[in-house]
Amino acid sequence: MARFHQPVPPVREGPRVNDQIGVTSVRLVDENGEMLGVLPVQDA
Image (cartoon, rainbow, N blue to C red; front, top):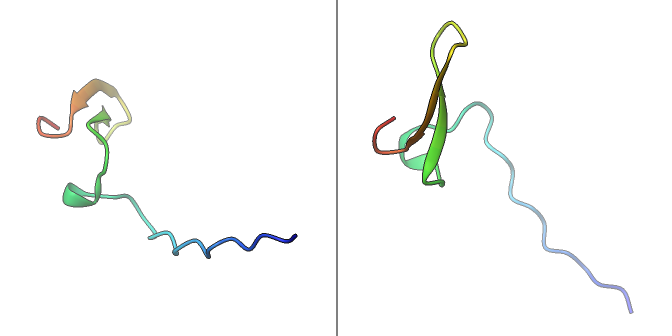
């Protein structure tokens, strides 16, 4: 029996910002590409 998958919604282009971020922590990188650390989203 064949199974049909639900279509995947389109992925937004570009980086997610503010309320679009669905994780609890993020890796923060500055404008020069330097790693600033892993921080909770609220602090980033």
